[in-house]
Amino acid sequence: MFAALFRITAMSRNTLAIVLAIFVVGAAILGYMVYQDRQTSGVEIKIGENGLSIQEK
Image 1 (cartoon, helix red, strand yellow):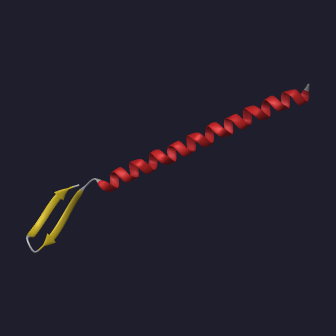
Image 2: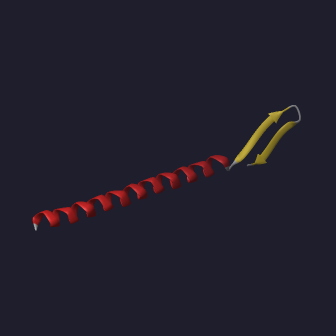
Image 3: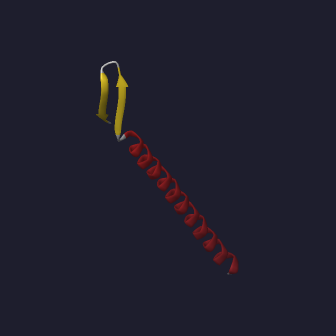
C-alpha cells in the first residue's frame, strides 16, 4: 500500500516539476520579448552632412 501511495506522490511531483519548468520557460520568453521591444523603440539622433536628423524608431 505504501509503495502505491509513493508512486502517486512521485508522479504528482514530476507533473508539478514539468508544469513549473514550462512556466519558467514561458516567463523567460516573455521577458526576452519585452526586452527586445524596449530596445527597438525610441528616438534616433544623427548628425551628418545634412545637419541634425531626429527619427522615431
